[in-house]
Length: 191
Ligand SMILES: [Fe+2]
Image (cartoon, rainbow, N blue to C red; front, side, top):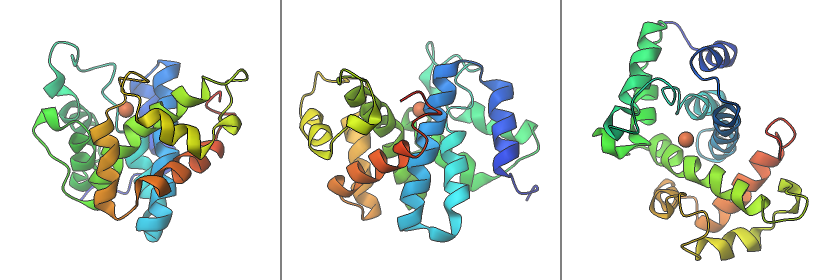
């Protein structure tokens, strides 16, 4: 086992490999939701779950995912190993958020991450409906309602979002956790 990856170091690695501002803010939003979920599901591992969220798209700008989606995930694992962090549990969680790479979610951490990823984009899309485009305007009710409109934020994979129920957290609870967690960093992520 390599040395423990701190949040500071994870942030440094993320910014070294990912330059697009939208990817950085997306990574931060997923980190926030993962921390919110960990408070319920793994209170001793809030930072660790957050780091898994922060780094889940680490290879976004380096792997050829547009041509071959199966490279998304395993490439992040390789980047982390090259950076000196060979953490199989984290690598598995990152890979399992894209089952196309061959790794299906099987643990609570993995179910949480595959659900948190599309949820962050979905909540952001709901915020953008409002005139002020602010997260503070987002109501539980509107997230629940939009979920059933398949054409709304069509890129947010509903099936992945529902994986949250395999952690024991209900869809309704997940909506609140996602909104509250993202609100904590609203300013930093421009929402
Ligand atoms: Fe993502």
